[in-house]
Image 1: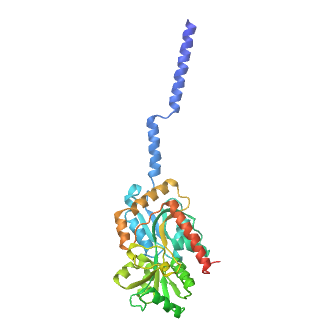
Image 2: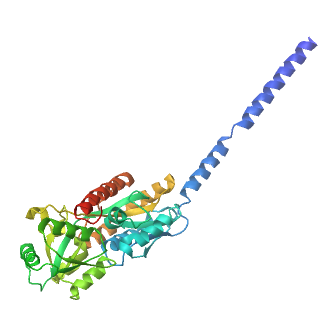
Image 3: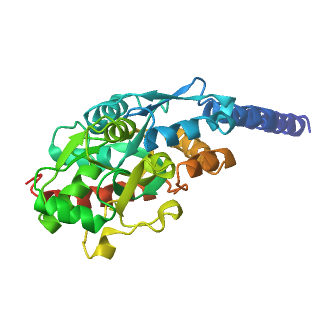
Length: 341
């Protein structure tokens, strides 16, 4: 009987030890909750300092205006209410500023505001350290057409009158563009190839100085995104002649497309936000969601409408497709007009 009693005591002791070991091995509910809280804190710790948004063009143009409109409300939609600070770094058709973004640490604190010229055209010339898929797209903000315009006191009232003049006076007409070898220049090269005209481009480091050059009489015409000249068109100092894009927007719905003139040329421009490649997924999600909400903010929509455009949202994957499609389409045109081989 005594032996049986001792055996039962031994079994009971082993059971208690086993249960105790199992309990020690498994975290308590309190410990699990603390772990979840720590993980959430780690993810939501970004951003813990201001974010720099590099605009690779001079102040005053569409890219700059869109960047500043977004930045003005971003702290409302970012964790920790951190601000986004816009920094203009113009030069080399947008590639100087984007090179800095390309070389930055992929931690979400250095972003870039790109356009078609910088990411879908300039890499074709072989002088950039990046190409069309060297970045992490975050959000597309705009997609708008371009126009050919002249001063309001110019002798050409219509596109047809202008076209007759430049055909009869080759290498005489000069026009300003916001960048060297960019989408505006490419559109005019395509127009020249399609019609046999010869005109001269004068590049600047942004739309604002390109507009100033026209108003100052330093050039005879201009090719810019439609909204870059809206203020001057509304004021009656610039006369738009034709839409060289593939789409129309409400502010310029009566401006004819080149395709409506039986000239198969169309160049629209995208604008959006990029980050260095290798951005962590949780940081990408935070930035994308914040920029998307900012783009939907009534204040941002109002600021964009003032320059005659509406938001044209696309997420990371769709924006990359937009960039890639534009890269290959522009490359084909550049080959056709002899800009690259």
